Amino acid sequence: MAAAGTAVRTLVCLFGCVGFSGFVYVFVMDRYSSCFDLKNRWLMVEDLSFFINLGVIATWVFYKESSWIVAAILTVLLTVFASVATCLYIITQFLKLSPEEFSKDPLYFVLVTRNNRDVNGHKKGLSVVTVKVIFSALGCLVLGSFIYLLIVDGSPFHANVFSSCMIGTLLDFYATVAVLSLWVAYKESSWINAFLWILLLVCFGGAPVVLFAASATCFRYNLQQHSQRFVVK
Image (tube, rainbow, N blue to C red; front, side):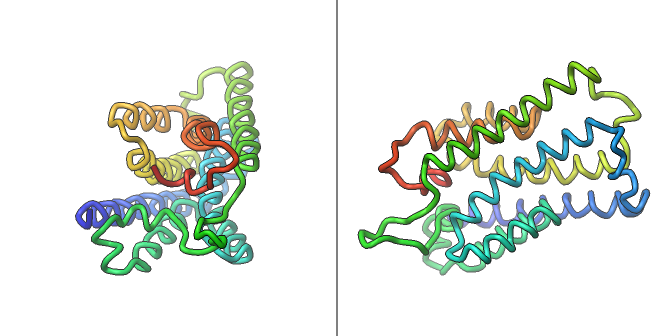
């Protein structure tokens, strides 16, 4: 398991570098001016899908952190620095592991929280109802936006859609998708199911992310089970 933890940590570092390259690319090309093009509605939808992915990660951060203030600050950093902040946060969680935890099951200990335990030793976190509402709303939002743009603007595969900001956003977006894919691969017991989910994440972005989060957690467990189910097997 230690080898798996080392491999995941290395991949997360690589994904963070890819996301950072997106920031650098847009800055070099046009100093982010293309990011304010309100006529590029596919860019706006891509941003929406991207922030939904970050919303799923932010949910994990709020579960993981004992302080709501710290979690809120981290969420702001995720919003501003996206995949770079996500990867840095994950790396810091790896660095907090003891040698015993790293050799035993590093991914498990990175994902779960040590804090917020009740008198029985169980972890407290977001209620199942809360997570259901959040993910259902996000899923409807991103699905509706995609359908609307397909009807109004048609296919997104046009040269004018791929501005500097769109290219940089896609780099950042897929760095985040790659991080989420590691979670999917860890959480799914079947490699076939994991591959299908990851394929959906790559092709359709935010909608499959919230669908996976909902189907893998909220709708499989009742209210008496804990939000730890959200992050681990």
